[in-house]
Amino acid sequence: MTSETKEILKQSYNNCAHEREKNEVQEWKVKPRASFLKLLLNEGKSTLLDVGAGTGKDSKFFMNNNIDVIAVDLSDEMIKLCQEKGIESYESDFYNLYQIGKKVDAVWSMNSLLHVEKADLNLVLQEIRSVLNPLGLFFMGVYGGEDSEGIWQDDIYTPHRFFSSYTDENIKQVVSNYFELISFERIETGGKYHFQSIIMRKK
Image 1 (cartoon, rainbow, N blue to C red):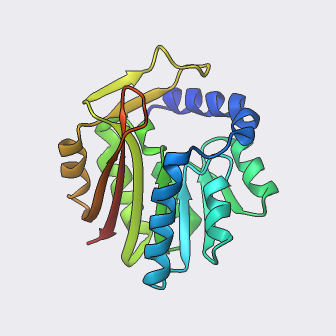
Image 2 (tube, rainbow, N blue to C red):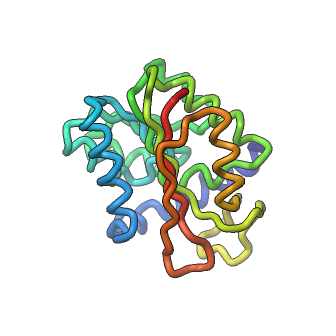
């Protein structure tokens, strides 16, 4: 990701942080989160890294269910909101997760990897894989349905953000290079894109 793209994303999310804090978690996001928690508890997983944690609502959910959470986000305003919730949080991007200096049982990434340029996704998946304990679990949730990438001109946020998306088959192919696919669910959201809910295990 270029430093310019990164700076634009950071500004965009800083500008909307307090607005997003007021929003309720969308109903269709509740079920994948509950399913992942159930899997974590069934397997005795106890530590989780929330990548692109935003305001920390998902981090707090996992914490409330006895999971030790570390949150990272590019936006310093988002990190402040996470810290206000008592979450161990760090300002960081996808490419520097190793700097946390810890391994975890699971990684949760809800609608954050859709900001990764396609040329960089392999690097980011390797980085996520490197912070996972053996047999660690990885949830990746992104919008998809077509292959595209670029600045989204219809974005309601300013400055406009960069997005990438994949067909179901192509995203499965990319992640399978690094992880064993446990489940793939396509969730309709009522918009142009559907949601790709993917649970994986470190190979």
